[in-house]
Image (tube, rainbow, N blue to C red):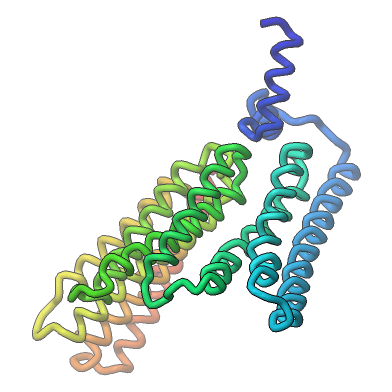
Length: 333
């Protein structure tokens, strides 16, 4: 392969999103040097442009909702489908064209964002206008399954984090709806079922964040760590509270097991260099220590002494969390 072929191949990889310009710059150890004035100007331009795109997308969505609400009763079924699902598909198609033509700009993702917000709601409107029986969850579950497949195929073509986000969001909705459709008429304890399902989904988010850390989906790592850790630990803590309402005398296994979860979250935050997981784990550790104190020590020690002990525990946990963040997360990033 000669020089020209190599450059053409590199250009095509950048256009398709498989390789970013930042990764190329990092590979060679430095980025083109610019004067501080130019860098400040470039960052300012980037921020203003991004804010204007986001503001514009929000205004468009608000305008579409207002427009649809005005004409809703004046158009037939076909009109309602057209202004919801149809508009979502059109904006998504425009976004795909712009992503291909201008892969490094934000205009394509903005159209995809508008489309991604309209398509799920438009699909529900379509089901309603087609007189689908909503007493069964299956039509809704299948619809979200189709939307998930649509975004997976779209993401395979464009390889963009926004499309990955919509794949994950619609995939999550599909999983919950599918479980609901399967278990609707069963005698399974639904509270336990959805708590454990949310724990599995939260763990899946964290696994995705780990796998995304070194590819083009790295921009989703933070939000996946935050939502994943919160979903997992909040669902686990709900099992602690549920066990508290049912237990007799003595510790329930969930009350002990939860300590392993939060300390495991802190260990994982160091491994993944995630301040989000560390923060969520610390907050739930504080909540669990407060719960244990109120359940087992408030009556024997009295609330004033318990509050003093809790205060010192909170100070220690806060100091430990800040130390871990500085030394092992930010310090080694």
